Amino acid sequence: MYANAARKSKKIAIQLMIGPGQMEKFSENEIVERLDFSLEALEPDELILSIHEDYGDLARKIVEHCGGKNVNVSLWTMVFADRAASLSRLPLVRDFKGREGYGAIAAWNGMGKGDEKFLFCCPSAMLDDDKGILRAVEAAQEIGAQGVFLDRIRYPSPANGLEYLGACSCSACTKAFYRDNGMDWPDLVREMVNWAAYGREGAVKFRNAFKLAREFRAKMVATAVSRYSEAVHGAGLRVGLDLLAPALSDIVGQDYALLSRNADFIKPMLYCKASAPAGLPLEFRLLMEGLSRSGVETSRARQFVAELSGIEDEHLKAVQLGGSFPAGLAASQMSRAKREADGRNDHRADVYAGIELVDHEDYATKIDEAARDAYLEALSRENIALCWNILYIPRNHIMAVAKLRKDFQ
Image 1 (tube, one colour):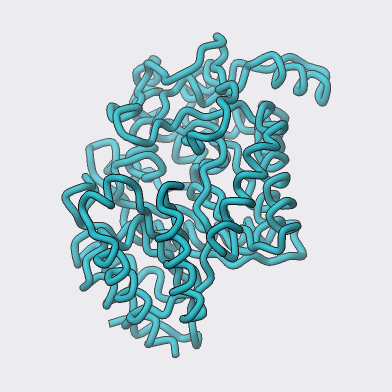
Image 2: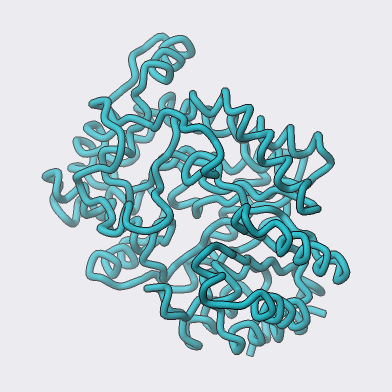
């Protein structure tokens, strides 16, 4: 099936999330058995483990079990949002009017309703996050993990509402921007709406006119992340990063080159089918909807986003109409991720193409065999990360990935 596979062996990462909900659905033995199936079939290089702090004994058991199979375990750690309950609350990002929370313009209708709240802390506040950094390192050490996987390392995405794409306007951030650039913090959302009325040409002018603001946001995120990375590496542990797809990264302040220089591996979230935060169809549908609801003509909004993201107009039009992106977009985004991660860097991090392979009643996103095979065909030459939770990935999907890996060996 995957005849174009030409390189010898590609790397595989798997993700495992265990919280109260999973412990209600599965016994400890069932969790270990499902993990074992994936370990035997895939022979993965990395396990990214998210586990509630109440289940320390199970976490240590999993790490020890993986160690016997030469699998690195990185503790999945939320940084800017959905942080551990034991950590003190930090100030949240503010929109241009100084508000915290979720936006009113084209925010995801599921925002705030589940366990994950996606309320992002201000990057200025994150620069003083010594307790969070210490806890990340200690938590990994306590279970014997080999690394820390940093997630939610960004500003809000379109799913939070159009208003928050211009964050953060708190006094600390605006003063820092003025100190660095000698000018006031701009109203990025207003300017985005104004320039979107001119379609592709407007996107080019918006990008150029607000280059300093975009670079400032990227620097704030990268600086906060580098403090985590330095502490994790200083403890002799590996660093992994969860990043939005390159088409979205600039919008949320993620610079692949800046971030990957302090990472051992990165996982671009190339979710072409998911209708959830970080899912490309949802994020771009909401971004275009937000511009349209702000008075931009629909086709102009689409052209503006096409130029801003590098995604073809026809694919965005399908998403506007309720569809999803083709698997080929994951391949082109993966190529872009590797190119941008290597830019300006002597150090090269491993890059895993994160694809959502879940098919379970707990998720609105369901990946069937046709979608799975399209992904694997498009990404046959790449390292792959199976997302989001191997407890909810069908065994036939796991075996299909195993076959792809064997084709490289």
